[in-house]
Length: 397
Ligand code: HEM
Image 1 (cartoon, rainbow, N blue to C red):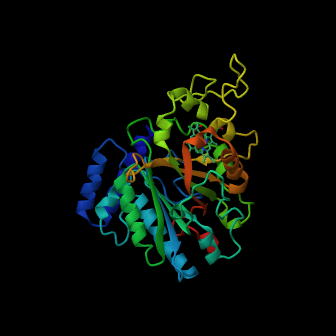
Image 2: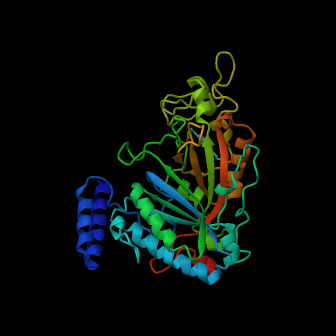
Image 3: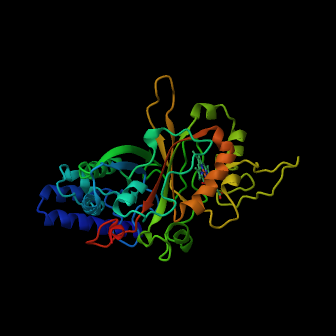
């Protein structure tokens, strides 16, 4: 089908580039990659109106890297940095090694690699004071927050994602090597979904609480998606047209506490079944929840404080595109889990779309008993660029 055809095209591109560079070993590696039935050779185009890595079925692995600009990194240095990183990202996402790549063989399995750049308030202010959209700052503090300073903020974020964790690691290493004169690493948040090939890639993933997570979400490739996510040409500031807003929330899951909750309680907390992800008023995952339905004893079937009731409104503006990854790290001494979710969402206006949802959830949401936000950051994702251009160029004009 289409995926297979795209894969073959990508293989040809990788192979030709390797031959052009005169490196027989690269050609051999590309041929090996082509021999497997997996998606190692598949590529996602880097250039375009919008940055890659957003309007797509999420890859299996992701690393979010937040960088702080060094104090003496000025506007010209930032521009040179973005030119270099754009070049690296464009090459790596095609399955070609970056300039000065010291492990070039690791670049030959793109596995749908994407690199998406986001700017924090600090970067925008340093390049073009006054050019930041009003929402580009820390989110207000919510009563549920237990933020650790080291998971917050940053001047430049790189969302590096692929279906192969080795590909992600290599891209991250390359990009960080080329960033180190101008930036320092603030935080890195890695995450995973189902491994590629374990399930149909379009199947809704599960989080570490065991829930089907991501059912109600705007669908990539639709007009609806464009309306929720991409900034229009008439929105201010103009440099962000074709870009979007990016919210990162690191949310810890209290798994030991969750273990003590029975299945009914778990289903009540969200308003959906654990097995199918169907709403408690329906049978299939995609059934519309019936928020008015009541039990024989008169209680709402979907609890008043269930996550899906609290997360939804009739206001069509209050919608976001969610892209969540699981994290599962080594427990700290005396603990048995260090797990949670790297929640991210894309929306063209963080204040109008994300904030009201988060405010409602912070006020009341049964799920808050088992989930604790420990990190928070907001970035502006600039538009994509054409070949020869660089990410962020509209901010410099
Ligand atoms: C729906 C889990 C945090 C917004 C859901 C669903 C689950 C879930 C299981 C139902 C299935 C689905 O439609 O995807 C979680 C967990 C969280 C979390 C475990 C934290 C660890 C958040 C946050 C937001 C959010 C921080 C936004 C501020 C939504 C929205 C829906 C949703 C908008 C769809 C509601 C609808 O049916 O219209 N979440 N969520 N969630 N969640 Fe969350």
